[in-house]
Amino acid sequence: MPLNTGDVFICYHIEAMQIISHKAPFDLRNQNSYFGGWPVIMDSEEEFAIVIVFPVEGWQESAAVVLSQNKDGKLSAESHGAHDPELAIEQARAVLSLDVDDSEWVNVGRHDDVIANLQNKYKYLRPVLFHSPYEAAAAFVIGQRISIKQRQAIQSRMSEQLGDKIEINGQTYYAFPSPKTILETSEFPGLNTSKLERLHGVAQAALDGILDRKNLTNISQEQAILELQKLDGIGPFYASGILYRGAGIVNDLTDDDLTKFAIQQVYNLPTQPTQEEVLKIAENWRPYRMWCEVLIHIWLRREVGLPKRR
Image (tube, rainbow, N blue to C red; front, side, top):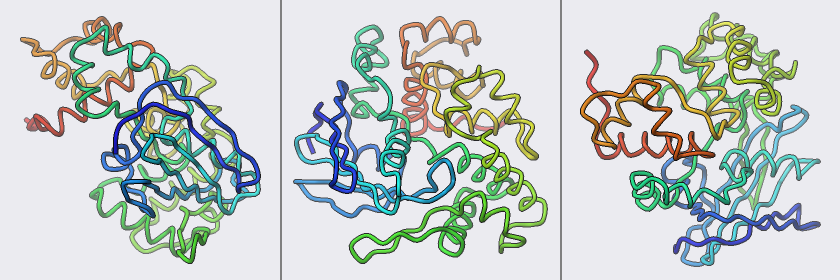
């Protein structure tokens, strides 16, 4: 599929259509191959389409959103199962970082050759988020002390056994259980008592509005991190993950050794930079500093590999 700019056509049950312009290139197939792994329902030269299924924030229902891109680069999104399709599609757009003004994303590379090379290499890849901060927090709690594959297997079973089911063209798709359903669950295979209690805390926080994406992005990042750490089992590392990968922070940077190592490697620096030096380098990345950080991490894992633990 050629990489193009274009318009995003949002279809609400075919009853209404909204056109959303996007300035930067976006390749849905590319995004899915790196991050999403969502079910693919169309893969041809003419069109590529995936299905994203999730509990809609507000927690009254779940939705399946079909996102498709034609060969000209135009995107469409159609909601299934939701009484408020606009809200469901808005959430799906956020998952793919399509809710952000991307008009300067190409220009970032014009100020930084390293970023320009990565943008071209990875077709202007942008971050993909969890379906919501609620699902991010749930995933981190479930995944404690087990492998990613084990965590994904548990989440898949929970979706099939406890989540809402939505049918599209004869195919059934399953959403992760809603916060209310989680609170009503007293046991589940693969989850010990401690994890289940922590999941209950996550579910209650979602119902209380603490894990709403808008809530987390409308307060300072320092305050959000502190609020998230009040959840049982959520320390600074997981709190940052919920905020950055669940809520979606576009123009901030993390302060961790792996990011510093990645920047040292990609910029060919003699020593690992300090956070102050990282911030100086990243001035050219504004207003998409997190998008650039994600590109650098993708490059590190694909081209260099993670550093060996000492």
